[in-house]
Image 1 (cartoon, rainbow, N blue to C red):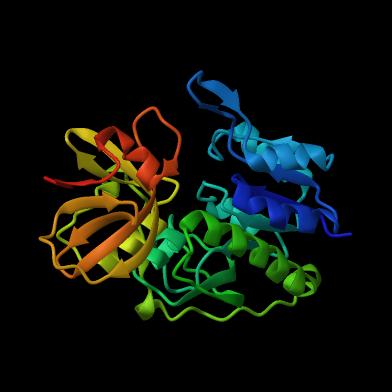
Image 2: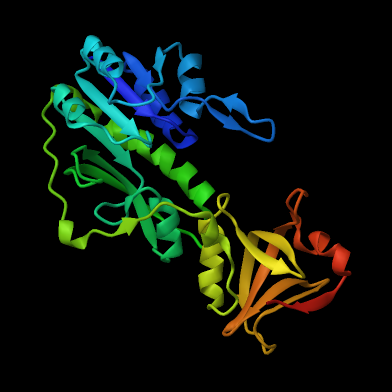
Length: 306
């Protein structure tokens, strides 16, 4: 039986882990536990939780540069490794150590959106479809040859959170479809068209500001692409108002830069129309329907934004 290792950390990696566990996994590797929440208590990564439920051994090296981490890996004599959103670049010696390869499930249709946040950038760009690529890892950033891809249409309601959850299931299916080729060591991936590559940079907290000077459709994509982190927000009379859900776009003859609400709904006016705001969050409060969140400013009204 092939000795398999799985390397992944967040929730999006769990479906592939569970699927591969049916084949047999020698060891699971994930990031160390991290402080989380207001109490800053240590929280185990989703992959660790799932692996322990499955009865699989879990390892959480801080770095692959340490002699101890390398000794551990080499002692396991791994023949095939599967990587899903692990969060670490793997050194060349690891890539060379597996006779049947180190394979990565990446949440985009490579070579489009190489990098850390492919799902978010696909939404920000208004892409009509995305997918999952099964590629052989090389030292370059998501530059390895691709064995197979699955495609998924992007809907106008998709948030990054929902789309990633769907792609995680697609990734598990794609992995199991291609696993026989990986196990026999006869997979023949194809080189990417490197000249067509685009890059999905890491998300930053300052990306969340909603600029009403931009087209309404752009803001619609931004809210969906940056949910749940870093989120999108407006400044209303000095108070940060997080926009958690958006709805329809419609024509509007008001000046841009206004937040308008009534029993019909809440809207942000832009130079080319108005964007419906369906879910809002005030500081220290839960996510609420927009009209409920705006109650402190009245049952209806309008405010000019800065």
